[in-house]
Structures are given as C-alpha cells and as structure tokens.
Image 1: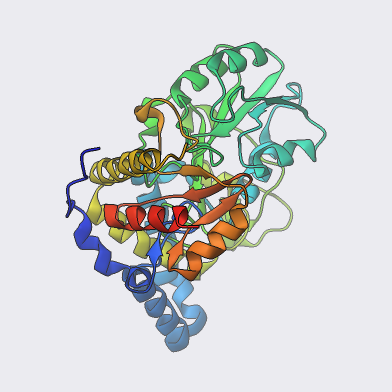
Image 2 (image 1 turned 180 degrees about the horizontal axis):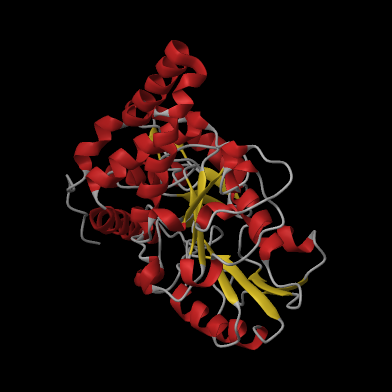
Length: 378
C-alpha cells in the first residue's frame, strides 16, 4: 500500500475542532465534531437572547432562518425557495407523507435504509415494498425497476446507506420513478457534506438531510429540498403556522400555504440548532465540497487498504467510486470493541456485527492507522 500523503490539503482545519485535541475521533457518521465556529454562533445567539429577549425574532433571528434556508439551498444546488426547515427527518417524512396522492398507495424503499424511512409509511398502513439486498451492501437497480409501477406514489431511499456506506445511483432511481409518474425522496443524511450534491442535475423531487452528521450542525436541525416544478402544488395535511402564507395574520378561519417550499414546514424552528448549523456551514464552505470529498475519499481508501493488510475484511462497496467514508469492520462483539477502543482514546461506533469507522476531512491517516493497531491488539 502506498502511504497517504500527509499533511493533506485540509489538515489546517483540525484546530477548528477541540475534540481532536483529546481523542482520535472517527465517528462523524454518528455525530459530526463540534467546531469553534458553531460554539461561537451559539454563544452569540445566547447573548442576543439575554440582551433583547423576544425582540430578536423581528430582525436577527428571522434573518438567521432566512440565511439557513439560503445556505442549505446553495449547499445542494437548489434555491432558497426550495428549502423547508425541520427539527428531524422523521418530521419531514410525516409532512411529505401527508401530501402524497392517496390513489397511489405504494411506497418503495429498501431494507438497508435507516428505519425511520419505512416506519413512516408502515405506521400509515401503506403498501410498503421493502427491497432486500443480496449482499448486505447495496440494492440492484433491477430490484427498483421491478417494484415501481403506476401504483407507486414515492420511492424513498438513501443517497448513502448507513449500513454499508455504499453510494446509490440516485439519478438512475429517479429516472425509474419518473417513468411511472412516481416521486422520489432521497434521504441524504449520510450523503451531503461528505459528498458534493447538485439536485438540479438529478431527476429527483425531494432531498433531505440535517446537521447531526456530516454537516457539523448537531441535533435538531434538518432541511427538505423540494423541487418547485413537481412539489410546490402539493397540499400537506400535516402542517403548522410556519407553513401559512400570512403566519402573523393569526387567522384561525382559513389556511393559505406558502407558494414555495415553506408549505412543507410546521412549527417554530429551534434557534440553538439553527445557529450551531450556521457555524458548521461556515467551516464546510471554507473547506469546499470538492476538496472535502477528495480528502475524505483518500482517507477512506487508505483505511480500507490498511485494514485489509491486517487481514480484516471491511464490508464496503466493491467499487471505490461507490464508497463513502463509512467503513464497517467485522467484529464478533462490536459493543465490546468500541468500548475497548474508547478506553484508548479512539471514538468509533457499534452496529450489528461491525465496528463502524468514519473518517472526515479533519482526520489524518495516522488516526485510523493507530485505531487499527489498537483494534487488532486484542
């Protein structure tokens, strides 16, 4: 194996994340590291709250929400008018589910998707088609093609599978859905941030993600991108006052939704997470989407190669182009191994049968190489 060049072009961002001074943090696919920029944004928000109270709503806090919609839109190649803010993907899915055509009862998803995706429609008694994976890594396009028909309202699946780190061909999935008049929703929680995304180049209708992982925003802040041409005439049955076109009219007798994606919003957004996310975006924008992908991919390939040299068999997509920064290391007792690594200062995560390792642009190759030495030293 050829050693990864160090330092890499984004190594300068390591000082932005204090946790790296105390641990070897390799768990960004569970929770992105807290940046100094996010902490500063949160402190500014608390100072505003303390100094002015609710008066902040009418200028700085309202502008913070507008700024976040604008920057989320730019992040995925969409527009401000195509972004709705939410506290969770579960909340997003509930609103989208309430807007779908009841004459099309079928939802197509996969057994590799995060369970919150099928849960939404299983709870509603929809005809959920759960596509199985033949290898535990990905689902072939042929399975989607066989499942999607004129009864399908929505194909809901992941950009990157949390179970394997495999990157899906979401453009091909979107084209299959459109051929039958179905909409496509992509759960991008494990995608955008570590992968560049341009929704305008993809035949999809919804893309959602949030701050928890690769976007460095923490809990409680998510977004839905909703393509204007195919979704802004939908009428969600699950709604709230932020979806009202004249929300400060406080008229309980009529409901007129926003003409843009804000029709998919519900209640008051949580301002602490909003500010944490703005700080995270400060860092991501400074680093750049393409450099982040290049560095993170190089770290991932170095991790996989080093693991194989030690006799391990990581569960990853066979093609490097389809691999993201999620590497599954087989383990007979993942919880024990994660705890054992944590005692030695390596932060990873446990999933059934595997220790999950996820390097990001603020890591260096020495991080995962030292982790592997500790992992194999049993």
